[in-house]
Length: 308
Image 1 (tube, rainbow, N blue to C red):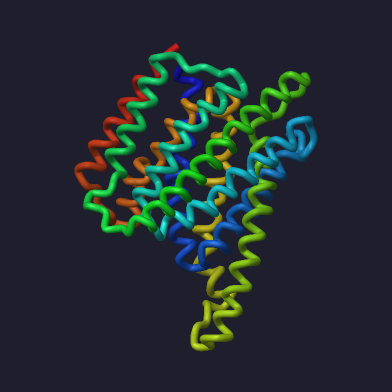
Image 2: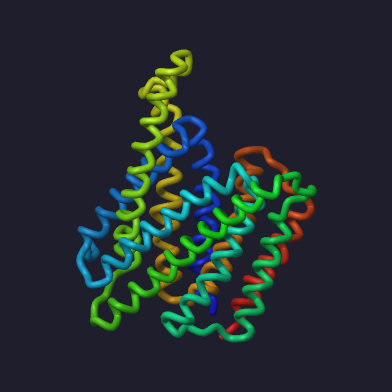
């Protein structure tokens, strides 16, 4: 089981590193622009691979990978609606754990993939660890209407994330049944095309709002383009490499070989894997509960390695 689980673990590590890079770049450029450019760089890098060594945009499964990217990245729209209502910890808890519970049910009903009893147990152990680590520490002082709206957006984000993963699994199945081979970097490129389209649309919307705001409040001026890029480019490039180039390729590799429920359970540890990176780059010290939850989640991953 070590070999199938390895790409999922690598995905969590790469995405954890990308969170730190994304935070730095978003503070300089703004979230929509930083997201668009990291996807652009990653799409170019993976596109070079796909057309030089892979299959480009060919293959019967291309529409499924494209739609997987649209759905998966489209889920971020709901994430950014949940964040201001629930906060980062509760939003991450609903989305990470929700997608890890939703996707295996869809895959079972659609693709017939079943997990063993031990796999289910250790996946749930991982999710319990994530829940302990991410659950809000104080009583939530949120209005009922705000809480319901935030939870609804979080559930929609979880569904989108889970459906994107299942669509990727379906894409590999369709290619296999057609006798075609598609490598994981190429499928990651095809998926990112859909994600880049969504990010571009939202960047245009954000830019229009920014222009309107500057007209109303002329004292608000963003950084000059040259200064903005001078400060942001290392973080944007690092985010593109860790998150969307290496990370997404490992994610596709994981979904190519391993059931969605196992992959998403392990990938749900990404917020826990962020802890050492946040301590190193942001100076953020972890709390005891975060460490305890991390230990439980890692134990779940280790026990998952013993499953056949």
